[in-house]
Structures are given as structure tokens and as C-alpha cells.
Length: 122
Image 1 (cartoon, rainbow, N blue to C red):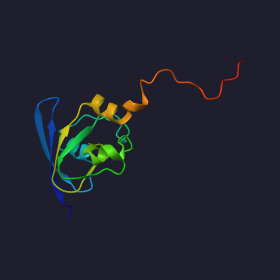
Image 2 (tube, rainbow, N blue to C red):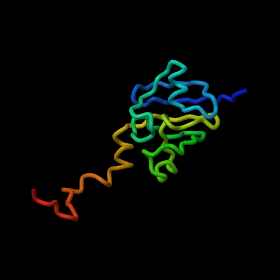
Image 3 (cartoon, rainbow, N blue to C red):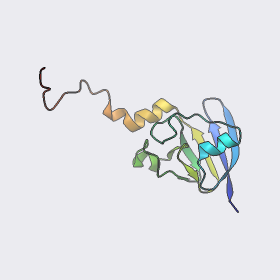
Image 4 (cartoon, helix red, strand yellow):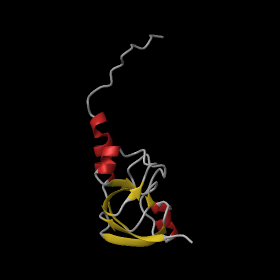
């Protein structure tokens, strides 16, 4: 017998609240799709920030979330495409660009990339 938990998503972009019963261990994104309530996603691999949320209550198991640093995970961010439910959960969607900049912003915008080793001329 599988255990299910209530998952609530506050969709900030659309001003709506979605709710579904999701089996423990199932990906949140997949569970909402099965319930006929699709959520935003892009890669389904935990490598981008399209499905990023901030946890308001509860916990996610998201060991597959390559697109989020451990620091951002500790701050309560999660990626629903690779996050599984461990118990009742409430999250709110985030602006994809905002989370992307938190994750990768310090690596961009620092001027031209310079090569350490000059390329050989042809």
C-alpha cells in the first residue's frame, strides 16, 4: 500500500493555488501532471530552474537536483521535476530568471573570457 501526501503549490505567476495527493517517492512534477494539473518545466533532469520553487513547509528529497547548489537547497529552494514527496508539502513557484541568477549569476557578466593558453594560428 502506497502512502500519499497533500502537496500545495502557490503559483505566484498566475495567482492560483494547486493541490494534489502525491505518492511518497514520486516526483512532484509527475504527480501534478497525473492529476491533470501541469506545472512549468523544461529539462525534467534537475538541471535548469524552470520548475524552481521555494519550500514554505515540509521537505523535499531532491538529491538529483543538479541545477541547484547545496546552499540554495539549504535556503529552501527546490526543483519539482526531480523532487520527491516525503510528507505534506507547501511550496511557491519562483521566477525562473531570479533563481537562475542566484545559482549562476556570479559566473556571468564578468567581461570577456580570456584563454589561458593561446589558440594556435592556422
